[in-house]
Amino acid sequence: MSFTTTIKEEISRIKNTRLESISELSGFFRNNGTCTDTTIDLVTENATVAKRIYQLVKDLYDVTCEIETRKNMNFSKNNLYLIMISEKVDFILKDLSIIDEVGNFLIFPKDFILGSQEEICAYIRGVFLAKGSINDPKTARYHLEFLLDEKEEANFFSRLLNGFDLNSKILVREKGYMVYIKEAEKIGDFLRIIQANQAVLYFEDIRIYRDHKNMTNRLNNCEQANIDKIIETATKQVEDIEYLRKNLGLELLDEKTSEVAKYRLKYPESSLLELSEIISYETGKSITKSGLNHRFRKIRELVNQMKKNSN
Image 1 (cartoon, rainbow, N blue to C red):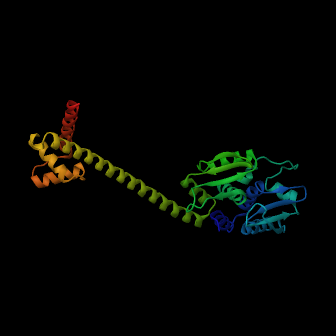
Image 2 (cartoon, rainbow, N blue to C red):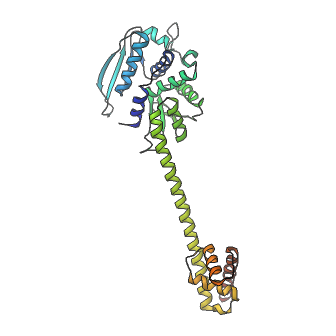
């Protein structure tokens, strides 16, 4: 079962007030229904969603829908559930703010459909039941989308989502307009808005795990980069010292620089900090990381000068 299916089944069990049910059906019908003067046809791949719509219509309007099961012809193994309403069609469409009093299609629902925050959340829930999908965070990138047919509805719905600071965006697709959200935190907020509480727990657990894993990887990469830098620096210092020993002799260096050079050869993989602690401990003479760096810089300058003179 997909993550989207699990969410839709969870929110299909939510108990609404009458006004919330009207708002939810309005969101669903606007983005799913095919209407004539005598029928309303709705289609879903989810049996639980079909039962949800059937029950809401029956409870609100005392109308018994017909439900037919059909094979999906779009390379999907899921059945299609066709919900057909042939009673009180005009009244239902007006009550859900799909058409006005004279039967004209309303581009946007009337204010009473979105009269409170709870009703706005119910409307959004209805649109998700009709057209929404969310990637499983365990197996894919964070992605929530709604593929809507009309540009006006996409713009209206995106503004509705962004009223909750969800940062939704719109892309034009061949078969409509995709309203989408890609930020993990915003998708978690969306699940809270539609009251998919179990899905929120699952999503946040995966998100926290992935964030922790990504942070660990970044720290490991940073640590590895530091180790590589330490080894590279130490290797260059050893090469400089070996060059001096071969061409000049370390005995000709001043006492402090000669001592540092011998310790670097003895501990070729130590960082400057580690080397300063070793020298300070073994000689009883304190030397800082900065002091070491200064002496290795003197060695580097001497090597560069010798190589320049030999050319």
